[in-house]
Picture (cartoon, one colour):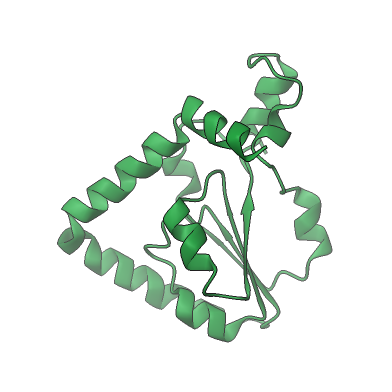
Length: 160
């Protein structure tokens, strides 16, 4: 199933978008520094006022503006959701036992494409190892949810 997931990510341009983002960051680090630092400070400040059971990050991407060490220290569980996790981030996540990476389309676009038969497959959502369901939010005691640029960085308009 993982090979299908990689092919699907490539077909829909998720990998290309993700690579473009990190390339822009690497070329412009100095210009991004204050934004990234301010974002991390804001997240840490906000996290301190929450219960400490579970933190969910939507659109976790490259972890550029995620204060991972601080969040790992604050929360008992961290759930990071993205449509495609970079291999470097998968490797980095191994160092953080409280981090769980979920691969999912939280926009709902791929599900609609499947329903409308715009992409020929038996089950599009299982091809991306879609481990996300909005029921997860209802079942978990989520104390803190952070959404990273979902609306401005995805190529499709979110359905849900």
